[in-house]
Length: 176
Image 1: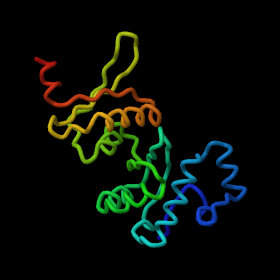
Image 2: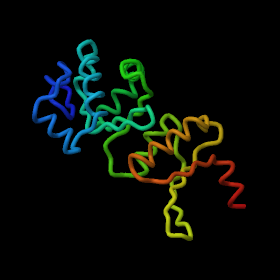
Image 3: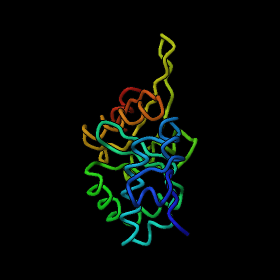
């Protein structure tokens, strides 16, 4: 089962887009991030057969990071072999975030926060009618501030969600 990517495998290997893929790029069906990630995955798949079993559905470039939306098998492949993700990051010279293709907002957030467990996802409606999504994570497992700010930017640019992250202890104090 070959690696499934948004562009032709031949284009990914040669680095030159065929007219069909070029048209997809111009029309916005695919992005430059899709092309870059596809090329990197095809190169890595030559020496890592595990990658031939995944499907890359969409890629996003957000502030120098890449977000890869993959099928469920692809998510499991990257989680079970952290070395593959590290090699992809080296190939792209950027941080890579792997998420599964899901319509669920909670699932998307859980994938971005992985390995930190998401305890709760709540929607807060602000007085001006704006929507804010609040994520609560365990206090001891709270990611560093830079990662949280990166996740907030990623979620805002890829899903249009304004995100607020709290740790469990702070959330408990607010309820008291």
